[in-house]
Picture 1 (cartoon, rainbow, N blue to C red):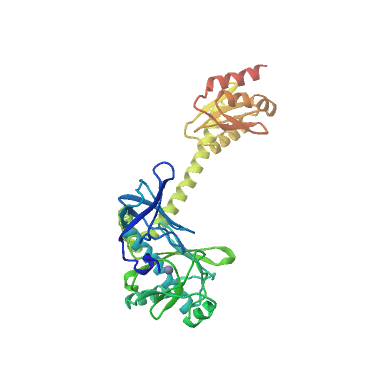
Picture 2 (picture 1 turned 45 degrees about the horizontal axis):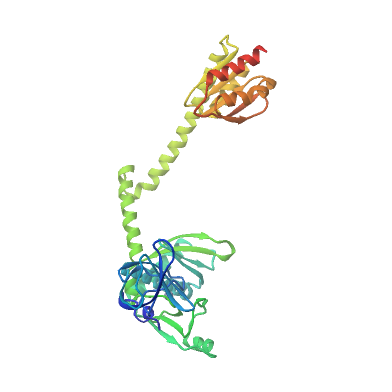
Length: 394
Ligand SMILES: [Zn+2]
């Protein structure tokens, strides 16, 4: 059994530096005698901490043993102190053991199999071979998991020698079938939650289900034919999530002027009111555009120019329709919030549209008597007007 497997709570150690070579800027790869640093594997991220006083950036395992990447050089032959980042290690122990328990409860009590496990820097997730995870199942799973947490059941681990009879040994031990980690070598390692589950695993685990503290089940989403993915948090992560949820609730109490029980209703009311307001604004914009069109059409100018920095393209189009119906054959140059529109006789607009767009430092396109697009910071509305007047005079 490797040191981190024998005692996952041992976070301080000494090691002899065997080799050290530079891996580019501020990165060195170090090989040492056996240490307590956990190398990435079995779905569990690698440890952080310090080795001989320099920061551990990564820990991996290859054919020759463990490779530790650090941010400073270490002298081969020297004995150095190893310090595991205990908060990170304990977090991984909680998430990993929590997953064992969740998977065992889902399988044993609810007949739902786990097909994969992901331990991310923020969330954990398991993939479940089911298309159903409703509120009743969620509550029942949570109850069953917390019952086992309250029972403070011991979690233990031991090696099972491999060989020709490994499969039979596993069956005799009552180990649930599960994919063995691809990097597993040497004897099989069994992790047991007393009375609940025995499983093969090479990760680090807490010693009692009580040390899981709490398991927070989060959202699910479909992963197609494979089933669903369930996000969850264990222990410290769940407590931090709850503290954050409380902070957001407090903030919403202030913003919405109601307690948590009124949040959904208050937000639904706001959404409905916003939609109503948007409808009203659209209606009034249309009315205003029609009135502006009538006013523009009454002018004797050959080119009608209108600039409204607040107008969107839809408003400019309404304006163009209004002008066209009031004074057929007029040429309109309308500019809004970063957008422009030229409207008039088909041939004229098709001929000068691109030049007008260029004068407005923009690009656009169009058809059937309209040319529209975005205009840039270097727009020259007077130049655009002259282009249209010249075209009309020709
Ligand atoms: Zn495990």
